[in-house]
Image (cartoon, rainbow, N blue to C red; front, side):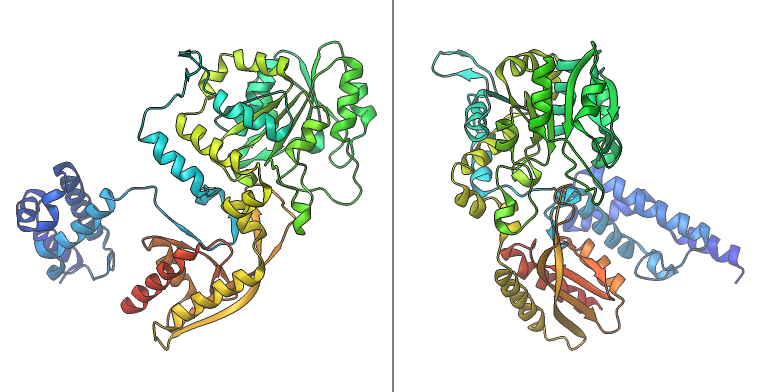
Length: 478
């Protein structure tokens, strides 16, 4: 048969939308599916089949594009699959087997049980979000976290906005709009999503004054740059990269002394802020929020998630006179956080009153500091679960690898870990990766040395069985 004649035959065989819609009435699955979703699904499937016929495509689905696969019953199966996908939430639980603890693409930090429980309570009930219970009048939403933030950091005042980029923007706009901000060239970082410190500074209305070189900046560079219209000395912690070798930088304490001499405020953007000294646990030294405040900085900003292990937020702590001005800035309302973020943040911060409890209960801290013996035991358990499937084509190997902190923090840190490397005879590793990625819940690992690698540092205990079920289902279809 001529190719064009074959296309015409297949097009004639393709049922119309109304025909398929009528037949769907006999399918119980569609009883609870909104008509708009049903019609959309049918149209999408029919359009895809029609385009496949016209383009001459084969194998567009699991089966060849033939007349027997264009009958209504076959098409309805495809419609069910699409409708089910449309009705499922787009944001879903995902198993992080990458070994990157603060994985930006996978939702960054996991909240503690305390934070989740408080979220459930506050989200389903009214709260005193902006009501002063003692005075019986309107209150300020930041008051529920200000005291605890000041207590932990040693700052005079504190407030919270939606993320750290917003915190930096708000502070710069308040303190130095129309004035020069002096910053080292080596600290003009780019954070996630291509947002750069110079861009944030430009949006704030400040004038960037670069000093020093990429690898070396001295105190005299800052002092020589000070002019009558200098509004701020800014230090940016390079938390997402590191310059090594022939380097020189100015400490925050030295910058504060210089700022005091010339009556110019000093601000530090910590990026991934932390209240825990990770060097005590064999990791790289990161400046803590407490240390930055103790150095005398007028303002310190940092993220509420990432290394802190709370919800996404931008936290601002510092001197009361400057924080009062920041709180009065109209941008504050545009950048403010909601009750859910406040509830999760307060619960997280309260755990930091006892550092040992914080390490135990905050998932990010727990995953970063967990003994490798526990990870090895988890890898062994997963290996047993996969072996119990009883498929001779499945090969599982426990291997040594390194995890990463992620989230733009501790860039040079390689944390020893244990991984499960999987191969399946007769199946490419790319096929394994793809199946795991489209599984429900998705299992996100990585490919190395022709194996699908799962790092057990970031896999939660109750997810081991889920991974086993995913592999079992995959092998049944193979």
